[in-house]
Image (cartoon, rainbow, N blue to C red; front, side, top):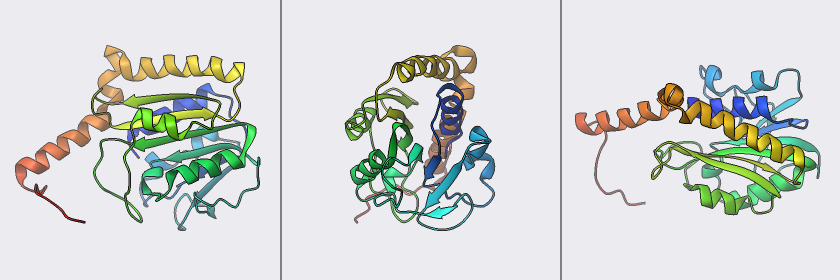
Length: 219
């Protein structure tokens, strides 16, 4: 998880009135990365269930995002960060998310756009903001944003409501204002994009130093 995604999650948790329980799909993180990947402090005092297809840090329950065992309408908030690209059928996972959410439920997600091949068990997809908008078409209301260079964003972040409400619309405006303040204004722009810029710098240095192979790879 990038620091910028972590920041977006914090802003979301502070801005929206999110229903319970909070379920995170893809909650596993490598040991030593709890400072970045453990999102529970943003939902302190609220029921939080971390789910993944393998046990380990951050995981309370084994679940397949494409075939969740939660009952219909039983989840208040479903979180999914940097997970859909690892699923053979991401659309099926979003159908499952919509099924298990309460009528007042919300899904919060992020997906990479410009990012290296990575992860467990494999890496299938990259998504644009318009692509995420299509994937979330069954949700009644949503806000979707891209963070990073305009023509090559680092990742896409979205918040989608199962049912459109005046409260969600009002909170969308507040969230947008906070995101623009954090990532768009000159004093905070570099701080907000620091994790993205560092990643690009590492890629460039890797190519210059010869540590990053350039060539053709056949699957």
